Length: 369
Image 1 (cartoon, rainbow, N blue to C red):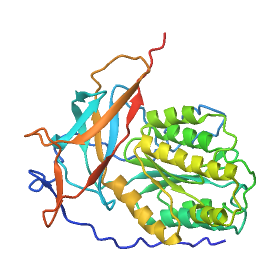
Image 2: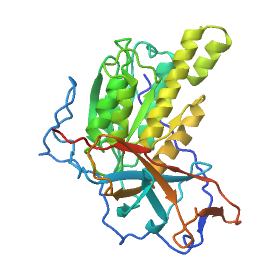
Image 3: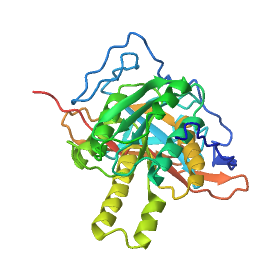
Image 4: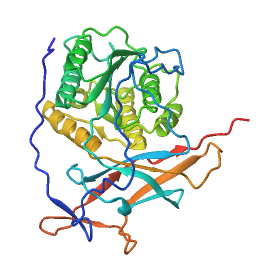
């Protein structure tokens, strides 16, 4: 059991990025609005009742009830290399809901600690002791924990037939490592991804600050009570970005090239990858499908950079109808002087392509009759 596995994040050189015409002269405006602080554990925080027959979070997990009329949107702006674009002033952000412009109420960008729930598939279906997938799972789990900062909070949840909280949110890495050491021999063959993911994001939705789920999974669901569509809706409404690391990519290609995968197994794996892409895209995260162990450190760095340099934006919807319908959110970067999309250029004045990662929408609350 490789309990001391670590990955050292590869040094990555970030291009100096300027945004014309104003961003190059302006820095982040900390005084513009109130910021959303990252969570701190409380000893007297009451437990939240679980939606289904799963164990509740421990009592000291920080939970808060957000204003339901306020829509929170975590926004990441990344260049083509996956590096974050920092120091974009508030006035450049344009948010629309179903095509209607919304007024930004709060805005913040800080290098604050983050809260991460590491959700790990650990079923006997793929992760038999000493198997290649077992090694890959542990490499990804230990490597990501090793890339965190000292003040980052992390919890570990493993799932097979059901999810189990192996360790609570903590900055004590010894507790986290003890939890990972329990990933020895898998017991059940089921891998109920939908149930585990829905329970996790549902509980995290009430925690303030920068939070995310890092999912290490094959993407296959075998026996969940929830359907894929119901899980999608829960993910969309939770407002918790999901970053997925898909397992078994190289191994699947090796088996497929030698004719060991039939058409049904091949389709199952393709569906699994699409499920991971859907959950991450609709939550404002990213899915990664590494084929080599050497890719892990770059993936960890990109995930953590995206979380640390996110812009936390909120607005009160102009549409106050409680009809339960899906509201589409679009985030753009607009030059307030011209109304056009801003350009990102490097130090040589060349255009740099960028992408905006944010949740695509949410379901409005439904009024109870």
